Length: 81
Image (cartoon, rainbow, N blue to C red; front, top):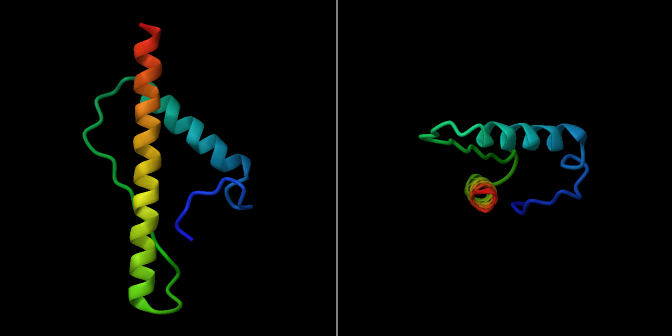
């Protein structure tokens, strides 16, 4: 699965929510960020090409999510003045 689903048991933990809040707080500090590396993976079982495609799809999902986070933070900052 490559879609981000916060209803999955692994994603529903307080740790996930805590880490996302920590990341948002860090971004809000206003540091100049030059690069963000996003890594994604799939289990080693199964077909290599399938797993490669799955990890690429997961990376794309994470990249889109982070882009949306940055967009929202920029919009919020702009509306505050």
